[in-house]
Image (cartoon, rainbow over all chains, first blue to last red; front, side):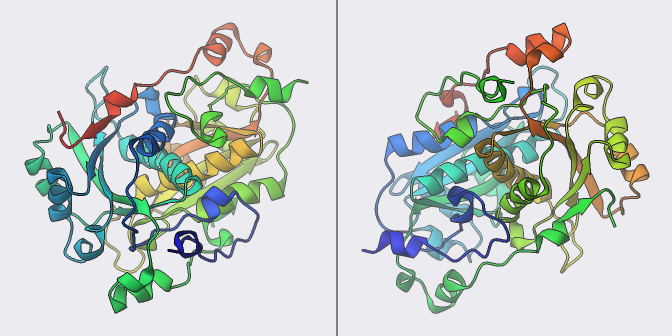
Length: 198
Length: 198
């Protein structure tokens, strides 16, 4: 199976950047190759070294491997549009934040931002290791809170499908079209301002 | 000047990860070497390819180079503890989010998280290019909103000092002690849960 061929997607960069950033994209097709525990350890190790406000490290990860009850529970939390393809991901991970600072108990307004930093690290490591991640906001937080009895000081933020790239042919026609669509981003000039914000 | 020697800090990883993740840390000492425009372009290009909810790309960056009025304005927005060292950073960047989705005008609750993903990318690129970034939450948002006349649909989230690593000896004694302190993180077992969240 041409796993590595499927993993490449054209990325029209304006400036030269690292391959682990350029080659990352969010597929819906995963191969049935499982992800080893040591490989998962590397992904979470990468997240571990992100910076965070007050070094709080508010990120938490709830990991479920295909075939496990927890995998089905995370799958059940997803919006209907995500379930048909996410069910094939060998690993589903709920990302969560601790909503308050451990020392003071006051709200941590940087928690979501800092979770993003940690997952950015994880993504670069995954891309380097030929893994793909697809992050989803489309899920019911209450389902995860209830089915895993998450304490109220924690909040699920995304569900992430993780696995090796699969053949787009295994997707339905509409998902296949999205899988093969070109990547698009705003131009640099639309996101970077020099000296003033006009 | 032993710029590259200063850049290294011991990182006690539990599992092998990419150098661009492992070697990143947040210094307070910057050399007086300026950062070229092409180098800055690479950092923002890296941020550009992060994923985001609905591909909204809510991240914006307001860049100010040392000597410019905007650099002084960003410096003035910082909490007093950050100013003494941040004033030496050749580049200060305010990161912002667009708070609503462009298509629907509804609140984008993923904006802060997705900004984190973009800055995670930027950090990896910076580390690869021997640059350091120090992200600060300690600043007055209202000062940036006012002095740059930021529209109300945008929110400043961090101010980031960017530059090449400098000599810790140029810091005051208390900051030097923090600069040389060992890195610390929670153990993997404290942030990763398998199958349940207990």
